[in-house]
Length: 119
Image (spheres, rainbow, N blue to C red):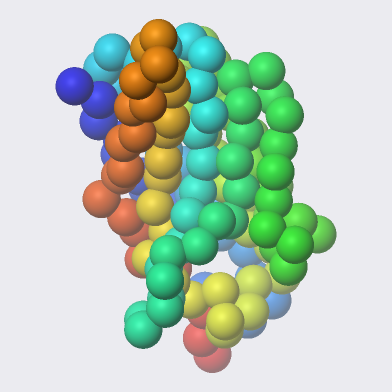
């Protein structure tokens, strides 16, 4: 079983910064994709950013200039540095990991961490 534990959410003023962290434990293949998604009230969950075990990153268009995703393969951790935060960034942020064993896809989610951007 795989567990993802997020930390770092909270309340921040517009223009401020937050850093989210996620630690993965359990039976995870070394070749995997870790990432962050978010869900605002009344909206669908959406991609924020993902990063492969080789370091390749993908960002949502409206976040790539403000957010930076990184990972430490030796610790199975992924982080999201969020700068220039806006009220519309308010959401629950979820850590995610995906990997394949043969042809079977395994996907796991963290419990989510609340980010609130408000003055």
